[in-house]
Image (tube, rainbow over the protein chains, first blue to last red):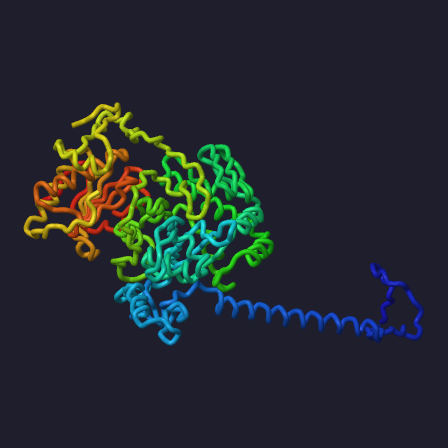
Length: 460
Length: 134
């Protein structure tokens, strides 16, 4: 029995028996795309692939460049790890032969022999093997004439420890070149360029310099302006007419632009000259590093780089500069060591010089700056001529006239008086005795000091 | 100052006596933070360092004069070099076997020489104490 489709519960529509419905099958038939659309897609693909290849090439090239060129400066003596280093003196292989008298040019043989003898002995640092990952850098700042190195700084970088030790060499340091006439070390550049400066500086510090940077006043100002100035606390009011600049700064926390930063760095009239100046310059370097490390400054690297390339002369490669920037920008500035070359101010022929103190220099150099494995035991210092008029007792050696320059008015901070002890006022136990109770006044007479206590009373 | 004098030949048997004399005179002259370092194994330039501090330029010069006077009158010893006397922030007295460093108490922090020489051979360090028996 055939059931109808419409039995109870069955919802189907009752249809008469007829030809079964013909179901239409539907299927997707891709429509052919227009030619233009095809072409566009293919073009995009090509571009994408090209960009990807280019990107890969850039990354690979950058990696290769970084690995090959971005590295710390290599010390000059690394190829001679077990040999000796010649510091100072005449090195026939590296000296300019035109400096030497030549008998063939009519110079007498005695002139030749005399010149060789006067050039003195080279300092051979026995076993001058270099410490690993340690290099030295000289930074000199030229004055307005661009012939005198107003600022001379030697830095030793320890790559392993990420430390920097900075040594300031006073511009009035007594020096000579190859046994010639004496002069201030700042004039070496004007006479023989950076090579002569390096030679004379190496004589007083006892180790070789791997790289140098020469910067002018204008470059310094532009660099400071480029990073937006320096935020620093000026420790005291500063006023001085240097002849080519009037320094005028007020005490207090402030942002110094290039012009005023230069004033800050050139100022020498601190009450406690040595310590205060060291502190002030150390604060400046810290402020510079902190400013450069800020993101806003880093964004301006192209501008900085432009100023550097236009105004700075250096034998650092681009890779080496990048390496220094990357590794030392983020260093802890509190670990930076800063010293001034120990010296004694002295007049020679009415011109003020500073005489390097050899033992003190060796102590400092071997403690902080020596790039060699073995300690440095001697320097090649210029002998002090016998004709010394008087010994300068003013510790501020930079407030003295330079040779050939109209002297400024030199202010004697002591105004001719004996410097009385000041710290003793706070300490009842700070009672000091001149001499061990003896009567040897010859010592006093030699030095010119007087046996005075804090109240000006003579002490026997 | 008395620089570049030829020193009397040091009697090595009396080195302890020399050092004790220097330590004593420095203490008497109110030097502070007196350190005696035995550095013979660390440097060829001296066997001993004595490092101390003074309170002022005048005090530092006085300490230097006292040491020089003491060693010369008692033992006939004169220094090879005395450096830094005029500035008197750091006076170095070189006796060959012994180097005496006299710092202004503020300056001493800058130089921190004892940092390098702070070897187990360091004899003692304390304010005003004399050296141990050598």
